[in-house]
Image (cartoon, rainbow, N blue to C red):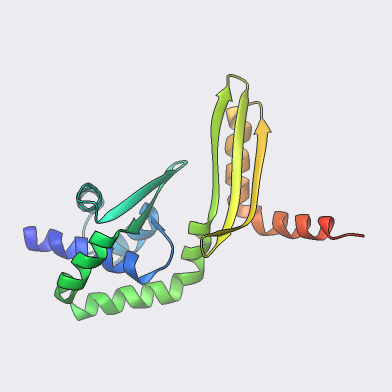
Length: 172
């Protein structure tokens, strides 16, 4: 079982090393579970162990965990990455190539909120490209439901909002 868990850890490190943006828990799960490598509970155990060992960094945004590889994780992958079976590496490379745009877009479109007072919530919406903000917008609303709706709709409509802002602000 230990060798199997090690392979799962190396798979995650390999995936995170191959992209230049964080991957979410659901993105990692999509690949690993769809391929049938393991089940959800073991995957979460492996992610927790990698995080505790400081091989991956976790950032919580709203209800989603975003993971990136640390220097210690890269070093570990450098030493032990050859233990990932070639077929699995090819599966990962294919998955990341086929889903690169979607994965990046999901990772770099961020919406989160926090409560300032009982009737005041701030919603921060952002689109990033290569780690740099293209647009960053903070809105204040009076209810949690409004904040949640804005976060959900930002994920769906950020491109249209960005285009509208650019067009409106560039009018003469």
